[in-house]
Image (cartoon, rainbow, N blue to C red; front, side, top):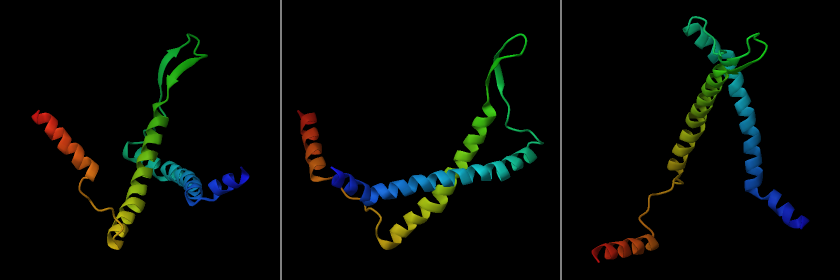
Length: 130
């Protein structure tokens, strides 16, 4: 049993996935700090000092001791961070790797339907004719 577990852990895809998760978490933190440090101040500058820390109060007690509020500012900040992360990953990783795969001839080539798909298409067409 221990031997099977060792084989499972030492397979390349498990190790690659682990490294990807760790790097992804570090990259997410980096983009968060970039957003907080550079993007949010630029947005405040462009909007005349408006910050995204607002909230909408739904229910508040008469003495204001407790309230239920929706903090939309945190969501807007998270959305901007996500969009920046997605753009960086797409333009810095996905596009260059796609171009590299095309140059090396590793890109998947479009193929026709498989023999099973052709047979199923013929059966479908025969069933339509009656």
